Amino acid sequence: MSIQAKAALWFVACSFLQKGISFVTVPIFTRMMSTDEYGLYSLYLSWFQVLTIISSLNLFYGVLDNGMTKFDDDRDRYIASMQGLTISLTTVCLIIYVCARGFWSSFLGLSPILIGLMFVEMYVSPALSFWSGRQRFEYKYKRLVIVTLLRSLFNPLLGVALMHFVDATATSRITGMVIVEGVICGSIMISQFVKGKTFFYKTYWKYGLSLAIPMLPHYLAGTVLNQGDRIMIEKMVNTSSVAYYSVAYSIGMLVHIFTNAINSAITPWLYQKMKSKNLSGTKEVINGLLFIVVAISFCMMIVSPELVLIFGSGKYIQGQFVIPPVVGSVFFIFLYGVFSLPQFYYEKTKFLMVASIGAAVVNVALNYVFIKMFGFVAAGYTTLTCYVLYSLGHYLVSRRILNREVPGQSLFDIKTISVLSIMLIVFAALINLIFPYIIVRYSVLVIMVAIVFIKRNTLFNYLRVIKKK
Image (tube, rainbow, N blue to C red; front, side, top):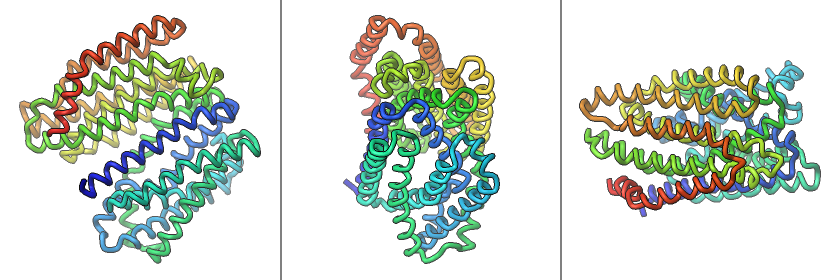
């Protein structure tokens, strides 16, 4: 295998490793913590993701790749200066917090101790992101695998130890996490500063800010769409409801592992089809892959109550009603990812920011109305609604682009996609009604598995087509 192929394989393995350990440890922490404490822990994670965007501007995403290419002969100093920039931005955020600690603690719903731990993590975590991005860029997968393994193992282990020997609270869990991040990320930060021998370099700071600031609304909107539900549930209901929702959301996102793998396979193939301006066969393959995702989604929805008992125990059973809409959301996340490919290929990405901001605003508005009326379960369906609209918007934009670039050809079979989408939405809305009837649910599950088994050759052929192309 080429170094690129080996690296790609190991990077995928790292991703599965991180997510796999994360999912495996969920049942441990949900049983050790009360629902209030687990909800507080989930709230901390949500605010951390939101505030990290502000304190780092996500300089370790697209900006890093651009800088690694543009300043390829000075990468050490570039990364060191980007670290310096994130530290400076985090310090500004810290000053703002210190000036009004009482207000911010009340607004965030977190104690000063947890906010202090969050700032420690915000100071050091970008260093690991910069380092990991460089390892991927330079195909240095061995060190990345080792660091990922150490971090993925010691993070939950130390958390469990502190919760067992100190107290089973969110503070103990978060303290363990921050200690591991501090040791690993802090060591990497020091190493990169030593290699780069700089903190401030005007050219690089100006370059990073010029690219990152315009993307800030897009990044914030995307995070609000993913994490805003938990924050609003805490404000409008209580922290226990955050726990119910978070456990259900984690279970629902299991489907995301499959859709990510499918997306990684289909993207290069579709790019090649668009490059050749020959879109023949794409509709059938996309339809087949969407059918696979729908089948997996149906099966996940059917066994929602059992999944909650496995991952969260009986005290989280209320979360079973959130899993169907969350699983449905993952389908539309995958769908809008496919719909948006022509925008990326033809470099027509202006709609991405508008769509992200629009979806986030609609999500907040719907949450405000329906969480008040129906409780935390409503957040799952508002999220599903937003991703449906998000997908529709991407389809309309990409169709216009394709009509201009490859007139007379189409990448998508919108009729079949519409039928599958409607079936999924209806199923997500009605499956809750048969949760008490286990025989009915498992009869439907057997039928779904039988259909997939009968169609297995056809479905495998779609995967073979992608591989061959």
